[in-house]
Image (cartoon, rainbow, N blue to C red; front, side, top):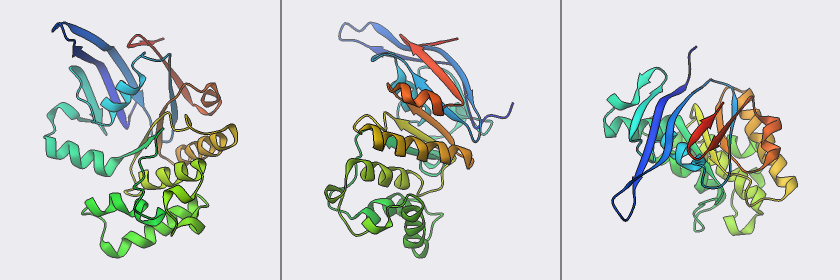
Length: 225
């Protein structure tokens, strides 16, 4: 099986105030295919967000191996990992983290400015295409606080796609949304997986299950079979 992302026996341990190691993730093994939608489910404190942070290289694992397109992550330099995170992974969060001083258009353009593979001439055209794709092009010149929460989350997904990543990591992306907007966001993420993206979403919402090609249940840091 050719996985876009593969994790083998990944572990994460923290050190508490008493200098005692506390396991957060234990022997996590899973493979993620291109064009699939994965839901990572479990109770609060189970380790869902931690494993997503490890997948996105925002947090270091303390054991096990990870592979991206067959390349072992352990063997990458910090610079190489930063490039992978920038070019191959898009992030969507519960809290939108949009820059309130930038317009919707400029928020989408922002990730492109640190990607040397995208020229300045491409910035606006690509941003316009993404806003049209999500049906929010009419908000291009507005500021985040001038649009609804559901619209802001679609801006976040557009921003996550700015560098055309292979993988979309979404951490509780519908946590702040009502039922109607939750459906819009989940429909959007499902469509992206059907178009070839690997979508991995952490959520408490049971509504996510009907969208998922595979559900991964985590309890106390352990992936349940």
